[in-house]
Amino acid sequence: AHSLTLATPNRVAMSHACAARHSCSSVVAVISHRGRAALLRRFSSAARAPPVIDLSPLRDGGLSSSSPLVREVADACEQWGFFQVVNHGVDEDLCARAEEQQRAFFALPMEVKECMRRSADNSRGWYNDELTKQRRDWKEGLDFGSTPPMDWSLADADARNGTLDGYNRFPPADLLPSFRPTMLEYYDALAGVATGLARLFSLGLGMPADFFEPYLRRTQHTSYLRLNYYAPYTGEDPTQLCISPHKDAGFLTVLRQDVGCHSLQVRDRQAPDGWVTVRPEPAAFTINTGDMAQIYSNNRYHAPEHRVLTSPSTPRYSAPFFYNPAYTAAVQPLPSLGAPHFDRCVWGYFRATRCAGDSAHS
Image (cartoon, rainbow, N blue to C red; front, side, top):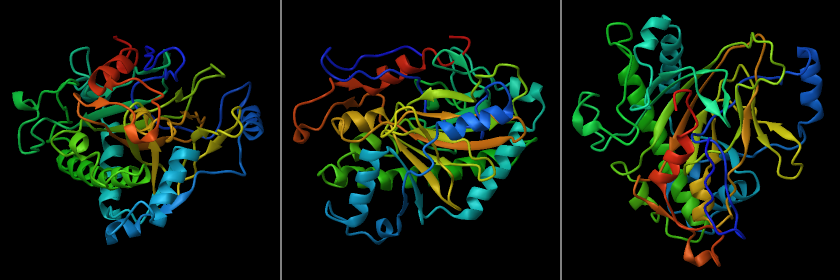
């Protein structure tokens, strides 16, 4: 993907692929799969792991900047940029139904998915040709997301639903009648989790809980849900990853991991050559901060580099929800956090620049 320098030369510059992505298997390919496992053990920081945080107090209300939960989340954002949350309020039945529909979609015949292939003028839809850091990923994906009216009753091709990304595309209702309603319900539930986390992020920076709402309210944010399928790796390239190391461009990401395949890794800030496998807790979501949170926080919150490993035998599914500001949002460090480390940027331009190298047709 194209690089974008956000600051003057003596400030921090960020350069990485556009959309948030999440990992795929349990071994990196080097020589043999047994050798890969040994290499992974050598360069992983097994003793350290991002924290698991109980969000129950968030639903009770009455939080302030001094609340223990606020401090826990702020510490996780500063130290890791990665953490897991439990007791988040999303019903497990909905999660199970969404996973069932996701698996059914990727099992559809290739010719059906090809009819939904994203294109240069519509980046929403199905694809199997995405690039990260100008290297092709080992995965299939389906992207859909917010619309200006946020009225799911409108037809997806309705002119009012057009965005900078294009229009949503879903599989035919006669093939998967429950897919669209289930996924839109799931989308709204994940947006609710992200909204609560944004309030905690704000309090952790010493701001009112609703500080970010003008940029992230339902009819303003430009979030999207990505369904990923990582097939077992059958290629010959010993260095292939499902997704190469990258950071997420938006505000924060909410991810439901596949409990059967632990392959999401985050770079260990205390050991830059080490990677930590993020092993999902039961019924948890994995959260990571993105570039926009790092900018707003004036470099206090960390946008972590992470990657997806391949597996020779185990397929993996994941569904990251990318919580992004309004396209027109001018993102800059909060004045209360000292001398700015970043220049002001407009989210829509920033994201378009990041995405420019993320598909084979671009």
